[in-house]
Image 1: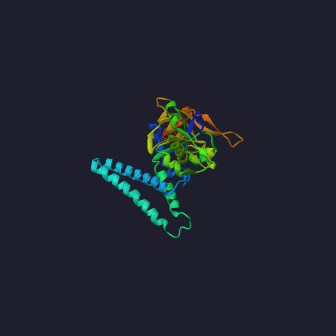
Image 2 (image 1 turned 90 degrees about the horizontal axis):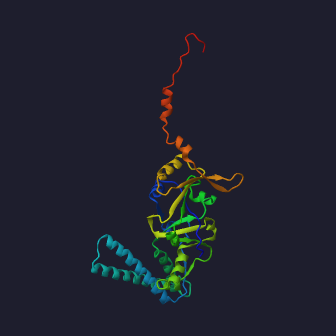
Image 3 (image 1 turned 135 degrees about the vertical axis):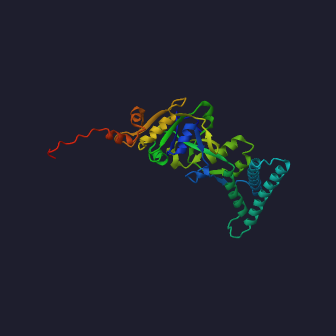
Length: 319
């Protein structure tokens, strides 16, 4: 996969108080892939290219590992860490895995399955559902361009929002991953079996699960950071904030004031149309004029009118 990084990567956002908090705190939100707008994103198909007993071993191991991890996390939160707790978690995890495999064998006997090997089909389907659960990581997505009209419309609140531009420090470059568009969603079950012991195989499965999207999305020119889910400190360097064409002046002023004392200065731009075309360009934003009129106090108008001397017309004069 090509590793040449763009000079900047960009995060389009609709504005909210949460977005402002994260800009000021220099944080990013790593989303659960299950919440993505494309249901095929991070949802691979498993190709059952191995025998049933091998599929059982892989599925049983993955389920056992997941249940064990979930129960261990719960036990730690309750401060249960003794040998009895560890033994109980191990037994329960194995029991849950065995119970699932028994259920699959039983259901495979259903005559409604009109196929040669229903058990193989069911094992493959359950493995396909279990594989994404193994990836308890979050993703934050970036685009390579700040001037993409579709990105502004889809993710920048129809130009009412912002686009934050980041540079990639050298120590963070290896964490940034480029999306591959098109190709197959298939993952071989034999690769899933070998991913724990072979780094090259693990990378192949990881790429298929986390870094592959339909060709229709290629306009995004997407790059991804992968980390624990939720709000995390940003490993990137915030360099610029770009405001959409319809972005309100008060919002521009708010973000400028929130970031103006940042130790590494942030540059500010606004989107403009290129006259006579459908292309966009960014223009440096000077806050001198904006700052002269904001923040404002509407009562100033009434206060000024109270100070006006109103001349009474002379008596007997015409009206």
